[in-house]
Image (tube, rainbow, N blue to C red; front, top):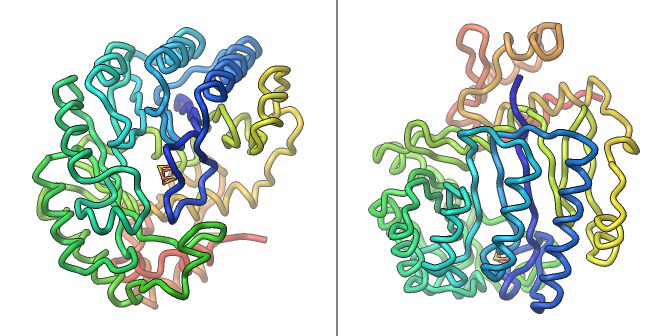
Length: 376
Ligand code: SF4
């Protein structure tokens, strides 16, 4: 049986980026301390009720590395002592280049963190400014050097494309330079315009790349990364062989995971639930913990099937009927015959033996294809 993934949310950031609608915000040291105490209480209470065995931990945010070394140490020791972690657990922490230091990286490494996910986004200072990032290219270079000195080998770079004013040339330069650093993994996300962001409020004054430019950037990313040894295993994710993100694969494979912290989502015991999203409500919840999986209804089979298809088709390998049958005890082709045929005919889906997966053209229209697989 697959082991669970643990997600730990740290909602604090230096400042809000112009495109970001995540549950993240600036805070003072006192709030950070209260938050970590509440988070520790949530973890201890949860693990007292259930023994949770996991083989991936992902501390994300927000900006986890904004925390002081003392708070990071307290939190990670609590994770290590309370969850039953497998020997080869993939333990990731996200970091913003502005908040990284050699001392913190050394501490993280000594506590068992073995994967860094660096929010690089671009290696062009003009684009970083447009994005409203708190770091610049020089910060990234220092951060990366510190990570290497501290001994991190497994490093992801997050990159963004289709940013206002970003040219093809700028994107290509960023990707080519990024590859020279030889990260083991690259996540490349096309900018999405989200409500309640600076970009959304100012969208009429900003110049976004057209759909065609957007596609050209994405096509470049795929081909250049492939030529340089990065295998695309998901719509937005590329890895050197053997360095796919074990934790994120759980989301797409419908493996269970437990999220702790503000607004964190879980899929546990067949139930999806989410922690409170407002800080004061989260403090109440975490300090008098009640298991939410006992309160939320289980998902219907149709919900689970839809999700399995929707998420599985994000992966390069797509979905196999044998995996489908072992989860649901029925054939995917009995349920989706017409939809599969229609999308294959349209050149959006490929089939190889018992597996279906998006074609190259299908990746460009992924959301439309995946929506076809949602059952009522
Ligand atoms: S650092 Fe990340 S989480 Fe924080 S505001 Fe920027 S994009 Fe959002």
